[in-house]
Image (cartoon, rainbow, N blue to C red; front, top):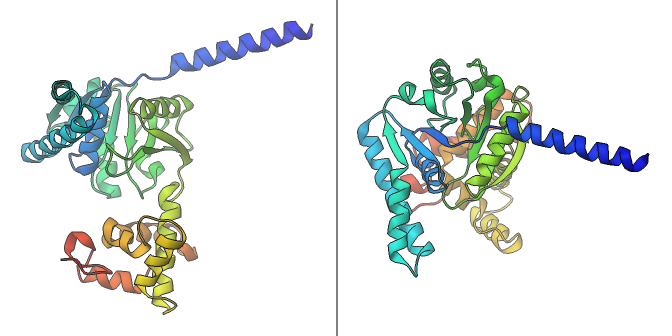
Length: 314
């Protein structure tokens, strides 16, 4: 009897797994909104792994620049991947580029897509307006995903009628190189949507990790408070910027010290993230603003991209 029961349980489990798999969406057609560094990177890795991609931005000039950047990135990949066979490398580049089309009208292209990935400006109002509009034109099965690194996914999803088909898909820069993807599940995200995005991430050659819709998700939730604690250590006069950076590189094995990393990421970007968290939870000591960083940002000293942040750059 026990044997029969075990067989029945196994059969039921197999049947349930097969049923769940059958319900998942196999993402083949992807629409990426935003032709900047992140959007272009997402489009590149999707096209390079056999997906049909439409890259959308506001002007043809932006899209031409994006396409040029993608081609240059692909040639670097091909040079390394096909070092012994340059012809195969050229074919890889041409095939990948042929899978990417562009458009300045998002509403006209989402009707036939399986997945919309948004990678535009970190502005809640702009993102919600975009998804609210696309919700009217996208197919019933289409999944919406935001690449936001700091905004609440639930707040964006609430602008649509497909909260169950909405999630976060947070890639890391540079997308073709960084293997991590954070898949963010809101309280309304269906299991079908979540599993479809996990599978999609794996087809890109990425390593997906799951996280609930909490401020900063996993990486930024750990990274930003660490960076800010380094700033507070410096503000209190406990140690110099240089010694803090040296300590974390030599003592913890980090490739960059916290001040070097802040300047690399951009002080304006870090401030934006921290301000958003502080607005959500003003009492959290981890989310308190920094006087010195606010002063640098007010002076347009954002780090490496402006030539000066916590350090000066030539």
